[in-house]
Length: 101
Image (tube, rainbow, N blue to C red; front, side):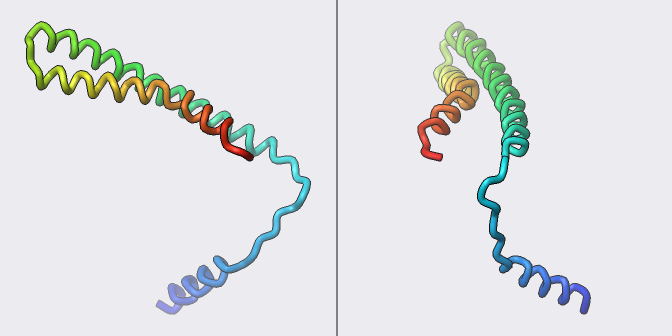
């Protein structure tokens, strides 16, 4: 129990330590690694969005044949979510380039 208390006390004081970054440091190795991870995640999200988009289109075509309003509504929601997920990486890039760094 005493070790837990000492550990909590150390964590409390460690959170209040100021850290000063160096002025001219090359951070390209770190940013390149994060960019690679971002590209992989963006490709996965875009692929899943394409699958949802196709699924929604096929559901919409089937609901038109059955004249079911509820199924059409669900299909439109799935098409919209698929479009957003497919275009999300491009939307994020537009937002990132528009923000001042």
